[in-house]
Length: 338
Ligand code: TYM
Image (cartoon, rainbow, N blue to C red; front, side, top):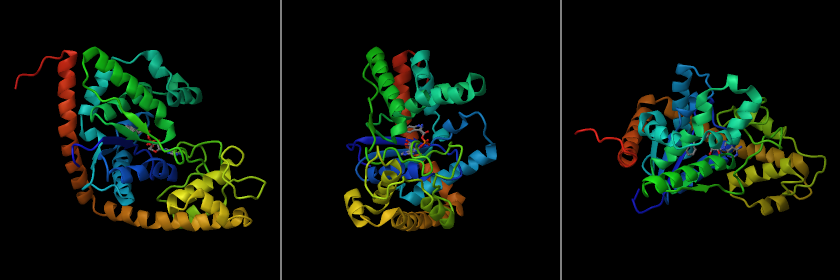
């Protein structure tokens, strides 16, 4: 973790019993790769998990461990990066307040995730936390002075807001914060729902029939892949506009095997969707089965898991505390006497 490497920061919510394939292919896979070349900070964002207003305390605790265990099982390596839980580093919320006071109501109100929630539930049924959520996300990133943020396409607007806030802060109080770049891979930034290829794969979708959870049973995963919605044509061709369902399957296949999409198109030329789906079902099950076993292994040893997270939090706090002290001083807070 040499200090001369560029820094990355990313986070994932512990709001489900399992991550889905979109989380992995869109984000976590890049986290694993980037820890080799970057000074990497990855967190389970449990504070963000409260923003839907309905959580169960025991469930949240369990899901936070399940989230950390899945990251470790997927290859996030505490010897190569800093892995921690957001609530263990209070500097995130402390910086968040300063940023909240620099954010316009209209600016926060333009976030599409928030607007979607309002459209779905109305403002009386969503909390203020849902409104301020992207500002906390900005604090997660800025408190580490991250250069890049590896995420899926759905987070692009939040990174834009983060950049605006960093620039605004620097303009008023001096060049303290790093303006981060999104790190979003075009090919895999948006994995689609297998039943509704017009929508992204999402844990909040009403039906989970098109969502592949990494911890699903192998038989359930195979069934979901084999039932994926395609189109009435039968040509296995990558064409996201005309053939979003098949193209999504090719994207997933390519991501999990490393085989280029063009090679897959050639291999399945004339064979039809059945062969593609059946082989992809095997590929996904071969990928998820050991991942599931490693996850359960970590969960069997919560003491070891908590040790990893404690070491990560201590490491993260060193960096976060330094940024926060400089920010607090710059904005005019009295320094507490030592
Ligand atoms: P979350 O927990 O919803 O998702 C975690 C990561 O998975 C990506 N992702 C996808 N990528 C491709 N295709 C999909 N269908 C798909 N679904 C999800 C997300 O883009 C994300 O990268 N607000 C964030 C969590 C967060 C964060 C941060 C991220 C909090 N603080 C700081 C980066 C930096 C979120 O809700 O992600």
